Image (cartoon, rainbow over all chains, first blue to last red; front, side):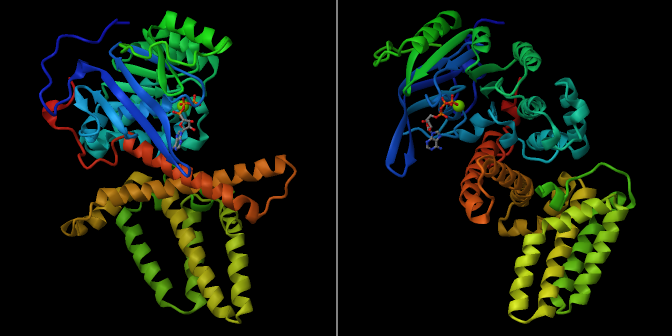
Length: 265
Length: 215
Ligand SMILES: Nc1ncnc2c1ncn2[C@@H]1O[C@H](COP(=O)(O)OP(=O)(O)OP(=O)(O)O)[C@@H](O)[C@H]1O
Ligand SMILES: [Mg+2]
């Protein structure tokens, strides 16, 4: 894996996506409305994602998925700033989304059309290709991912792993620069998991992966720990994972060890 | 019983009905709808339903699948039939029921013999004149795709809720499944919205400017 994506790039012209600018969150506060008022989900989160691959670790409900949904503007922050490719996500949501793909943890919520090939075609709609070209491209992409033989099948007839691969094909069809993955290995058997690891290594995209799978996290260059909506650790994946395991086995400190720091992941 | 059994899903075959151009099917839809809505006689509904079943058989829908579809409508039929019998308008009831069943049958034939993207494309063309009123046909098309897609999800959700009840030894009854079904349907709608947004399918800016597009 290439170590860093960052290269000296042109100063960001206002309004255009800079491929290597990565993702940066500054003093982000996110809350969800509930019947009892606003609930804080992320508190004063400052972190940068510049590595080729970063794992986001944290207990259930710690805010990992919420953080991923900030990066493509599905969640709206209360205060702070989220920049992707040098663009402020809140201002340039559509543009940012055309460069950012998100793989949901449940592929069935992501697949919209009834069959695999139709779903990939749907993604290709905004490429402006003719219908015949779209179909041919979709079939080709499914074959590349090893699910070509399932192209015409109903998405319900596919196994969880196959659904995952189809969803991934749909997301990658439009060649995003950044790929967000929300627990991509939960539905996979060991063999498919190993295949996914191998596949992720070959992708040209910058990867940000929310996961409970520490083997996957170990394959990432960097890792971030989120706890109680705050960044508790970030750095090279090995040491962050060791720290996280330690906290899980004992106890998380009440205050983030990075309380006043700013992180670069 | 799933939505797929009820409304059908595309099956890849080569039958007369599969090969029929989409606009034949469109005209048939318009004619049948008008005939059904305009007529007050159950005979028209009966004829339409029989014709649809016949066309479906030619299009590769098996008699067993048809039985499943009709069986899937049993609650609707029972409730409506009870209503009309109670209010003594049996002929009107038969008309309403046969009309509904014909439309379900029509959608089943259409969805089984035509790939959804083709139906949507056809619909987009049909709606093209609406552009002058600022209506975006693509958005309508997307809405239809999502609606068609949601039916089996909600049906499957219903099955899962029923199984959850059974596994706790509770009898399945509409008043028990109703609330969980509403909650899961709302959650599904919410997630679908997010999925569409994440895939850039809700954005007005449909394609990124060419100068900016990828390496
Ligand atoms: N739409 C929502 N409305 C209200 N609260 C929400 C919503 N989505 C998530 N939450 C809450 O936000 C918190 C963080 O959720 P999130 O899904 O980001 O956690 P996570 O780290 O991804 O957890 P997991 O590991 O279980 O996937 C949780 O307490 C959750 O209950
Ligand atoms: Mg999550």
